[in-house]
Length: 378
Ligand SMILES: Nc1ncnc2c1ncn2[C@@H]1O[C@H](COP(=O)(O)OP(=O)(O)OP(=O)(O)O)[C@@H](O)[C@H]1O
Image 1 (cartoon, helix red, strand yellow):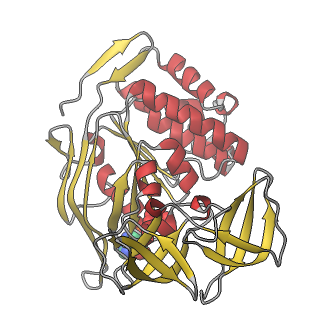
Image 2 (cartoon, rainbow, N blue to C red):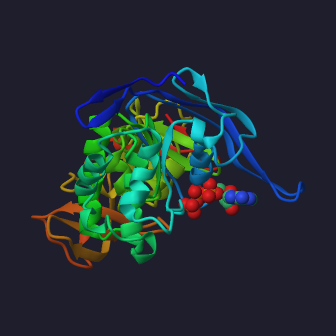
């Protein structure tokens, strides 16, 4: 392995490595017969020291992908490279990756301190105790060091598993839902510390999560997965502002994007989409044929009110208005649209059920998708 290490005070730093998943496939077979293709040709090129979140719904293949990189599952096809080295056929211990999996067993007879020292002892690290103490303090688990794993709560076990993944400063770090059992306040603090540690030591990291806030706050780039396939790989802003398809637009964003039927209409050299009986919104998608039926994506956050009667817009009666302090949220029945449309409104514009609301969005923020495939139309 081409990993370079240097000793710097009490901590051993690792020179960051790239991680490449090259057309990675995994088919599970059961008793040699029924097979299930959980990962279908994933391509990911992760920069040295970069943190990537694998984000997707339950069963989309996130954990399988991570287990393939860790060497806990055999690769059906494709390759995994750390730096210039192919690791797809190496046993887990030879891959030099730190693994923080929820189910990853701690050694029951050993205390937490002994568990953390375990990996270091093999490497003859003289300042092992100091490293354990420093890391434990940073992950808010000093008081756990003398306990045995059986005495810990699930949130405490999770911090120990994270510490065990980090203690050796591995060039590649793989984390599966690392913060899911922590309470809200601790999750925020440990998340920040994890990010600081990752920056400090330059771990090339994949973190699996189904929590988009966690993905947005931790990751440099996000790979959105569904059905064993990466649907989009990009920065949080790219994923949010320029979704590749309907699945990504729908999965990322809180509150959910509005998805309604529409028909493309050209007039006066401009392109619009007609929505419901009388609604019209500007779009940038110039490559879509006039009269084509499409699915329109409109984020509540992208809607603006105070739209003049002469401007293209949607209009409807407010069914429910929620005052969320820093903004409001109106659920609007737009004539001819099946589902009510959710609109975020400014805090200084309080509404009530029964009010009529006229709203629109900038052309660049009205997304069009193919009705069948869900692909973005541009
Ligand atoms: N050992 C196995 N044998 C057969 N099928 C499996 C096996 N492990 C996972 N699967 C299937 O592969 C698919 C992907 O599972 P995976 O655990 O990777 O999903 P995930 O995205 O991590 O989901 P979750 O968030 O629920 O953990 C699922 O349909 C799962 O049932």
